[in-house]
Length: 114
Image (cartoon, rainbow, N blue to C red; front, side, top):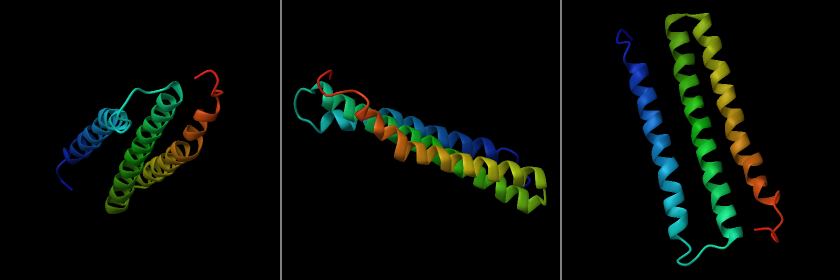
């Protein structure tokens, strides 16, 4: 690709999507209860929102890594291929953290304290 601004465009789109998730998820989660939130409900919703945000960040890294990987193959650039696969794998790891580790935060606090 001859146009160098396509990377900035993709990065801007990823940031817009992540910001939308960051602000939309807590609003949607708060609207589902229909009443006052207890400490446990608030903690569960906060952990769920955090999990979604971490997964969205990981997905951004996966997409960015895929773009760099494809650019490296297109231009026959081993440096871009290496960077792309590293970003792709790091994004996958961040997604796994969002899926497996973050939901366990709700179990850290005893229910008597919340």
